[in-house]
Image (cartoon, rainbow, N blue to C red; front, side):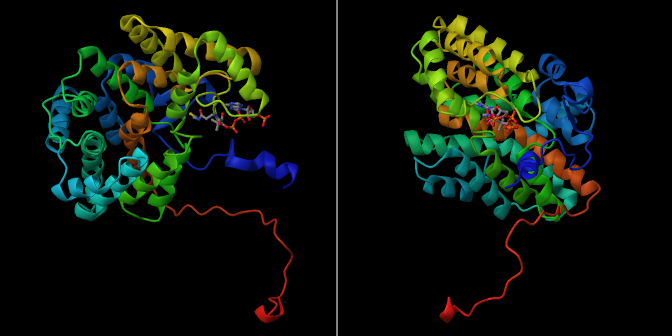
Length: 374
Ligand SMILES: CC(C)(COP(=O)(O)OP(=O)(O)OC[C@H]1O[C@@H](n2cnc3c(N)ncnc32)[C@H](O)[C@@H]1OP(=O)(O)O)[C@@H](O)C(=O)NCCC(=O)NCCS
């Protein structure tokens, strides 16, 4: 591959379309959803308000939010047929594969008949994802068939309740809410772009989201929070972290949870989730995981000028909340669904099939040699 091709790899820096949903660090605007800074939303809004914003372009007022939350609340349970499918999925399956299957199967039994149902389909997935994840997890790991409904008012609280079987503390519910806000939307990232490509063929919402889940699954994208957790758990102290990371860099290994395709010096989501990680660590009484994470952050900046992305401090934050590592990326799905669905709706509103071309670098034209002579 030529130098020029390597530089052009990954479509980096090329605009692939327009969006009114999000800016990612362009022209000093930082990370914004529909014009609102993500830190402003994390401080002053709930995840449901953000979902409403992404689907409707405006934040809801009190009455609109109450109506929206009631709609989501009523759709939390999942059909028995889906529960039966989830029961068949083995315990050692990657939970992202469970989410992919759950999403796809829901599209079988409750299809989006036409685009007038797009909001209903998006809201249905938003309400049902915590149940899909937790029903499978608790059945396969604990042999329990959980009740998929709860009286928790927020989706974040509902997820924690289904996962643990008890009401979360107000603080854990709030941290989950903030985390869902931070992960909700991020312009033309790989999984969202997948959803838009699928939408551009006029496919259905469930197919767009299923494809996006498969894309988010990879460790270079959503899987980084789990990989970061696996890494920091192996370090015994801040000094050990620095020593082991030096070896990883020497071996040219990627350090998960660091770097970004667009941000160059920092990820605006990091400070927010890092502050929660520190708070939870102090309350937990054992700050070692947080201290190790800070050592990793310092080491990567000092040696490579690489900074933590949103995933890195999510690892310790979720761990302090007692969330199993294998569920980290599925939580990302529960959140990013809002961005995916909003992009699907935006793509449909002004659609032309997405079909780029490629620079051909293969062999010169040639004739087929009959198989017997090859
Ligand atoms: C996010 C990511 C895929 C972006 O890739 P990218 O756009 O190709 O990255 P950059 O162009 O900024 O990379 C510049 C250099 O830093 C290196 N680098 C980037 N991230 C790195 C990391 N996490 N660990 C080690 N080196 C890294 C690259 O290998 C590259 O080195 P090179 O010039 O010697 O090849 C990449 O940073 C990565 O793999 N990070 C780890 C996975 C992760 O956390 N993903 C979640 C993203 S939100």
